[in-house]
Length: 464
Image 1: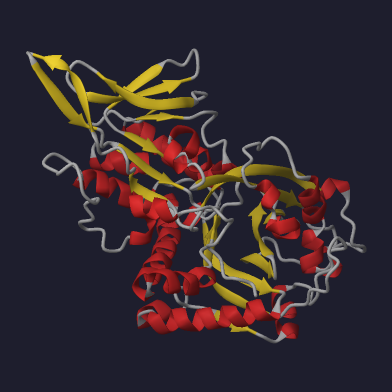
Image 2 (image 1 turned 90 degrees about the horizontal axis):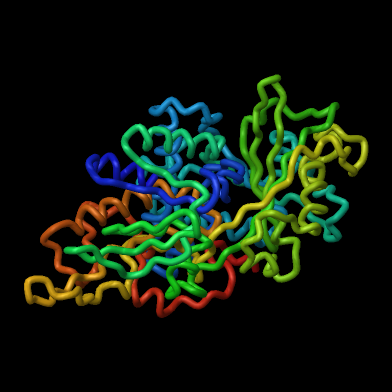
């Protein structure tokens, strides 16, 4: 999306995208394609930390990203299972549900009247009758997953607007449009280092890639590298941390009572975590169900998955849990099984992807601090010149929430780059003209970096 916005704004610029592996082979291509904000889950925290107006900016950005993502897919005619729909959070912990209600009421109280209409940012349908919830959404009133030792009973539900799509098809569809506009892409070209360089007249970034791929000189570099960013920008060590997420796709049982496809997406929220789930319609009229998560079922909320970049293997404990999760949440009768055990042929695939988690739960967007100093270039015509090192930008650290943050963050970043054009003073804050809608807490600043110390995810409501 950064490339797409750059090419629309600067059609004559030479823009190169360097991919370490194949196109869209990382977490985006591997995720479930769930365009879901769940803004109420972080609203109270954002309000406490940054104030009501900033919290509303985050919620509006998330909602606008959902709408714009599905609109763009339609505009570009991308075949990607594009579907705006409702989503449901099934909550299995009473205190978590009560806190969720407080958050929803706070968000609705602060929102504009038009934002409370059905389908809009602050529209929520709260249900508390377990029998009604179980019947309406065809879920079990009690989690029947045999792996779970605790007694987990439905406490309530929240219904609101979300969507689903095939993230790989969407991304490659947008990239096809970018290539048609002039983008050049190098795949299997891992970048190992970005260091100061120069040509005969200008400061340039020297982008060093793996042996055999060559090196590149660039006037500007944008880091859209999420969990892998600290490799290239050492100042972000401990500020952005990689985290492995795991997903499984399953077929419902042969005697399933679930509609095909399911009309809503789901999240299943318990005291220590949550799972997200979407249906994937198949050409033969059936559906696969994709569910991701399981970190909350591990010791210390999945601390073992932080810091890893190995997306070629699975965590066996998460596999064991996820394989029984759908029959657990929907119940054996609805899922179509006569026991709590899944038939082997119902497991379609399991996979992982690496996310980028930040110390304060927000992404880093803008001009990277610490690159504002000048670099002396060799003498030319007897004059030693200084050129500012100011063209290193970033949009990364999306905390597994990129489907509702990346698109609008890309739009904001390109506007910052445009505002940073000729005549700009090199030092000072990023020019935020025409960006009143963008959360200031997302900007990367020296002050924010100084306060960031990674302690695990902090972007969701506390569960106690």
